[in-house]
Amino acid sequence: MKSPLCEICLKNYPLICGNCQEKINEGEITEIGVRVARVLTNLEDLFPSIKNVTFKRVVEIDGVIIVIVAKGDVRRILGSSRRVLRQLEEELKAQVRIVEESRNPQDILRDLIRPVRILGVNTIWLPDNSFERIVRISERERDRIPLSLAQLESAIYEMTNERIRMVFD
Image (cartoon, rainbow, N blue to C red; front, side):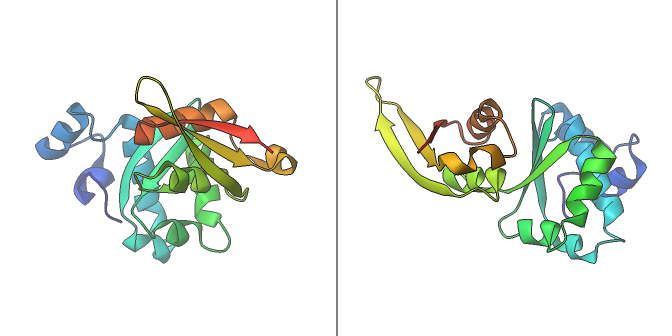
């Protein structure tokens, strides 16, 4: 697995080389990011499919850990049985969501609310020349959304600096 920290530091944490310590000091990777990277590294032997995964970073919102991986790597981690996800949640003792890296809030939101489908996305231009995206979801699927609306909105803002609002049709 590729990660912001070198393989030696992941295996020997808390002993860290100067290069990796600088990444931690600059905030490129957080303490929870180190924990997630270590767990994924340890799971490589059990699940060979994650050896080619590129781990980017972690966002933590209200106890939910959102693991951001490179484009196309969500399938490698989740697979058909989702055993890697269950192992991550068990090791970290928190709810975990896996998301592909993207600047498009719709793509990120689709990964966060999976298996719920997005009906549509509208853009509203505000008087201050900023904009907000309105995401429409079926009212029937409201209870199937795995995160709260506040968690979703703050996660999208943290990852893309865009505001969204969820509405149910």
